Image (tube, rainbow, N blue to C red; front, side, top):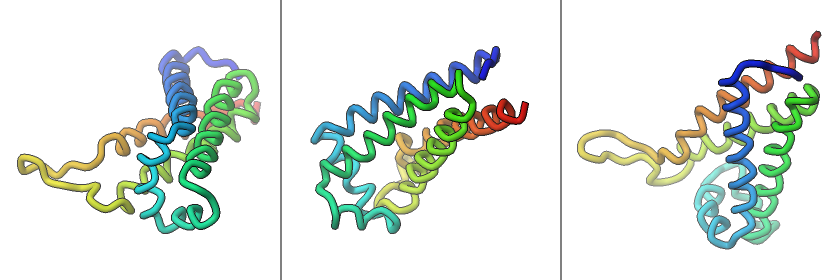
Length: 143
């Protein structure tokens, strides 16, 4: 797939970089412990700790993030890979955003302003880029 839209390319590169970097970080014990409260409190994900250790779950998530990050990059050359990777990225960011609703103490009032965990809320923008990848890849496949 060829595109000349600088903003699109820049956005996809940013999301890919984030997924690759965080994917690698998931293999560390520090990140495994950091994501544990998010997963433990999620009604659709908490069961994984009954099957796997905290580190193994983190490694699995990291592996998916790395694969999707690479797939988004490959999507510049192959629209089918872009579509599949874009859909996977949409899934990642929808789940990540859902942590805002499922994790205790995510919302609080600071100086009279309701705030949330902005490290999760930023994924709204990443979700938008992933949706653009899906749309762009789907369009390229129709041509």
